[in-house]
Length: 404
Image (tube, rainbow, N blue to C red; front, side):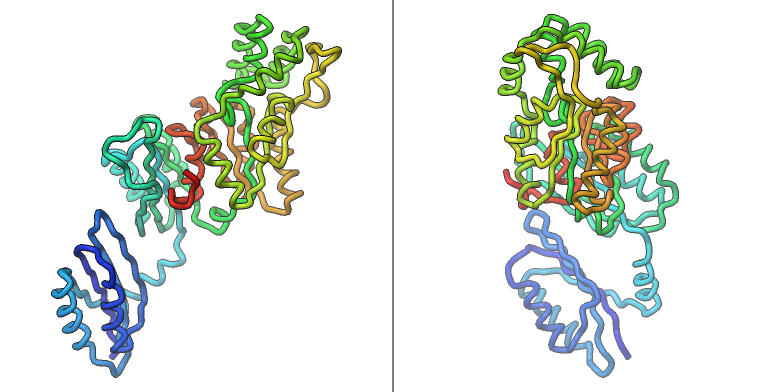
């Protein structure tokens, strides 16, 4: 009769282990039903689930593998698997599959214990865990610290809302970003990313910079903060702030644009996305004048933002055209997706303010970046522990694939 056996191998990793073991299995015409391997600090953990066909003698397999394991300094274990147990395992393939990404300066055992306990409470099983970031040095500069692991889980999700709330709370309490995504074809096939500009692609609110030059910084910042918290309508706040800039010289805008403070991780993120052929858009409640500078720097494909009226080299305190507010950002995201002939599931949106929520919730992957609590609570994903390049790990990139 057919035999199904799980072979587990543990020991010091070295070249040729897989070749030697599969040569023995091949001599008895064994079929590989499943296989997996990890290497942690030069220690191999290998599992091979194989089937010995009818008419084949499995005894030589066990004997020769034991001999080879002794020769290579490996420990092996054979576990017979019943046909019923194997069939039940195969039938689990129809269960939902999800990806949980943990990202931070470092990953602690406490953080991982909380996350995995929440996963278990949802009756989800962890199929695999892998590290996406490089091996961390014991002594590393704080600004370069980043650690990310990805957990592949499977099962029937009992309460997605509860799990999302738990992950949001753990992120705040434990200082770790936790992304929970369905593991489907769209996750690895994103084609468009739409960014807010101020406090997302750059480390400042440009309108505040302009206000400082105009001597109305405190007034404008108060209105900006209120709008970002969602306390007042964005369009109203925008018109009030722009009116305070009346009389400012255009040369001030040029000076600010040439010295924009770029957000941490932006260069690394943009370089990698461009290499992958992804389209990039800036959908901003800020100003086109500054968006165009970023367009040149990063090779951005689309820029939609607000146009300040300039007469005789000075700001008039008015704007031209419709305001790009939260609703308009979502409309533009949808429009660009149609132009690029892609689905909304293939779109990523990134922003920090309340006016970004419409596009964050419309995109297949919406990320609240270093956002206010209210924004994080209403977005499906958030990133707060490192720079913009953290988005790459949410997409499943590993450090070996990313420009350093």
